[in-house]
Length: 339
Image (cartoon, rainbow, N blue to C red; front, side, top):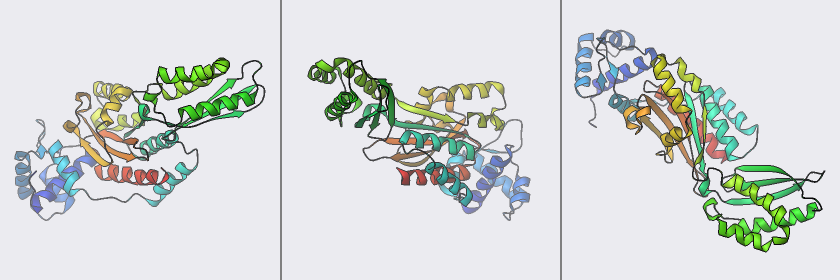
């Protein structure tokens, strides 16, 4: 992508920022009057025409003003956008929210998505670790009286699963705990994909005399680790925020967008290209026809063991990229410290 000269860069930045603010096509007189960049409306008009020919601006048929194209937004994000510090009060809110509850990855990801939605005018999405890559880290049994046992399973990514079981008649809690301890030893470090029938059959043969108890414990392990094993947990928050955006005031477009966000498979596909770090995907750059009107500001955090958490903001192409990028970066830094 060619580098624009200083004057055209100023004009493009002014068009993007004004359009983000107003959602209305931008004219040369508006730029000259509002942004004080020191050029006459005629000069600005010529620069806007040049930017249109270069593909950085589009001109709606019904307006004399210009709007940014995907290429214009991309140039703005890559070369012109200024970093905007997140307010100290907002950072304090983020830290307090993270430190107020549990420390499982699932809980942290849910809080992250909720925080981003609340702090922005956009929807927030997140995808957790791929469950097929999850490994069993620990399996514990806690006796809670009245013939019941609380099973607690923790995976390599920090996901916590628990289930309350009734002890089989005549089985002491000590037997349950011993069975769980031996099962943990046999399964520790195995991934979901390695927990096949052969592995479980070997365990069943070793514990035939405790088959009924083992059935219940293994059911819990399978339910926790194998459920949707080939997929990832998908979280969405703030979808209703999109309703306030002018681009989605039309019922048909709004319905299509909300339907898209309600489909876990679509959201998962939306985030799959995300790698480590912060990335911005704009309009046609997203390889999904149903997401052509959207932009994404996404973060990817790699955890110990190789699992990747992906989360960020979904909004119109007319997104406030300065605010969105700064917010996602700040939240990602806080979350990375906790992980």
